[in-house]
Length: 308
Image 1 (cartoon, one colour):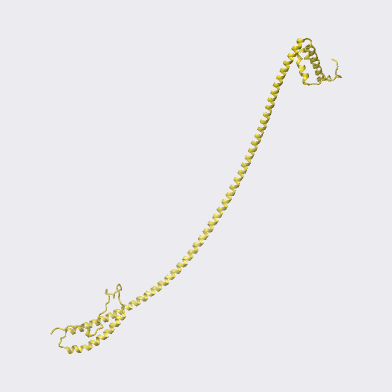
Image 2 (cartoon, rainbow, N blue to C red; image 1 turned 90 degrees about the vertical axis):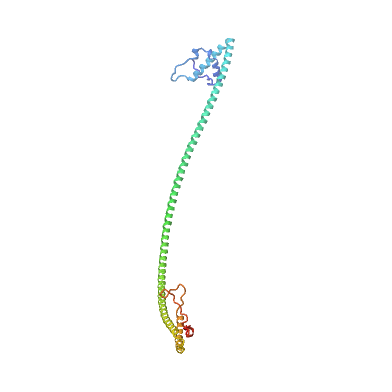
């Protein structure tokens, strides 16, 4: 093998050369197609050697294919089949590539969606945790405020209750003091009125006793007068009618006696109070009566004379 370093190398990796060589591979003998060289340090460039071998193999295959028309037709058919197979293969590869791309895109989108969902879930969990924390804080603050307000309200209520009790006690004490003072005043007034009433009662009883004593004395006098008058009348009726001189002699004396009696009777009537219905009696169970005719003269006394 000569050194081809000075010759220009064919472009490597072009699609048309690879396709042409692929169509002519079965014309190249296996010992030439599958040749290999041992690797050595500081030898030829391996890629340049492989490119030269491929060019030589293609030339050999073209020479063999152009040796007979039948071989050329076979070569054309095989080339067409290879092209169709290549198209199908490329279509399959394209479909696989599209499917893979779509799958990758779908997986990418799914991963993105999952990532977004995870992010949203994380954010939602974070927001939920933050909301829960804030709600717990608000609840704790509300409880603290409620407890503070309740304690303050209880303190105010107790203060109001204590002040109300003190005011009520002061009011009761004041009312009790006023009531006691008023009671003392009423008791003093009642004692004064009782003393005045008792004094008046004693005066009235004394006056009543004096009146009754005077009345009793007057009644005794009147009874004595009446008894003497009755005795005189009876004595006059028992005498004979033929003694006119005696009656005439007694008449001035009787008239003189009856006139003072009438005067005394008038004085008794003026001094003795009139006893109405329901008034007390004279102590004997009887109502005192006026003696009628106590002030009359002897001519007012009717005498009966015995017939002669």
